[in-house]
Image 1 (cartoon, one colour):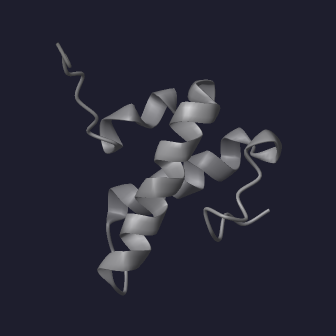
Image 2 (cartoon, helix red, strand yellow):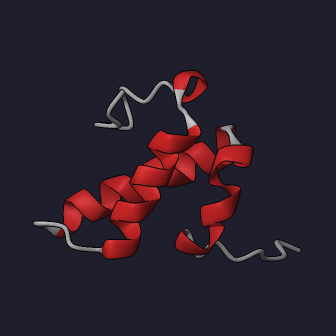
Length: 70
């Protein structure tokens, strides 16, 4: 399964290897255009919310900061 679009992303079927490949692309940051990189970032973010065990090793790529809404 190749992760191609957020809309077509079947989070339940993702494997550790697929997430590892996605993270490797983000680490290399050698995209043809900025939108491809942003799309991968959004995919990893969706994975982090729905399947945190898969995205945990790559949380540093998301740069999500905790904040206090109070």
